Length: 256
Image (cartoon, rainbow, N blue to C red; front, side, top):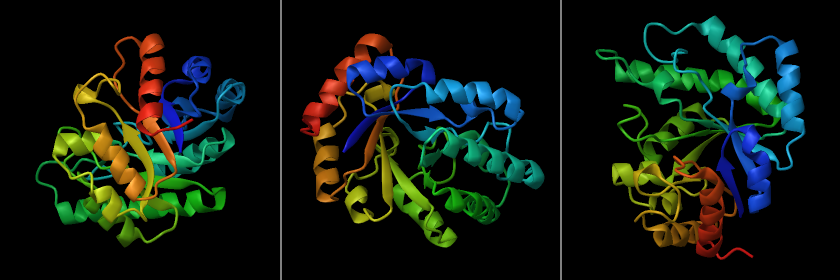
């Protein structure tokens, strides 16, 4: 199992010194709609990272709607093509599809049509991702952040309809706790779970709250999960908490 942290690339050295295995940055930080000349300077920063950039989150900007009447198919196609190519160039292999602002269903819009649009978007993404050997994991979000795909079973239902090897699912401990979703859903759907996000109570640093991490650890062990686990939280004191949370998770998962 590998422990990582969602953070901007300027935090890479701090995470490396703390012992993390990887950093998870945002797709948006690669500026997919900026010219390649601008990306080249960004790429140099990523290439200088002392820690692997293994995964990326925040696939879509909030203003890029993939659901509703205002979907711009041409912009979406161009964006995904550039975004995924740039993710591959920085060495990441997994992209988190949360993007609640982009995927939420507008008031009065057909939920069935919304699901069709999400499936269509993921098929477009899969066409680009598979030659690049990228995996896109669908992230269930709590209802405060998105009104569609709020549980692991819902995410898997979408993944099954897309039916592409590059489209899998993420389990986020924070969103599961917020939704009251059984952690056992990880075991029940283990073949689809390819990435994990964790935080603690109020989305703060792991080890600072009351979330039942022992239950999560037990379920991941039952699922024989040996992949990546990323902290995605709101830090109060980043430099100290990243060390404390790393030690907390290392002990929880009994890592050497």
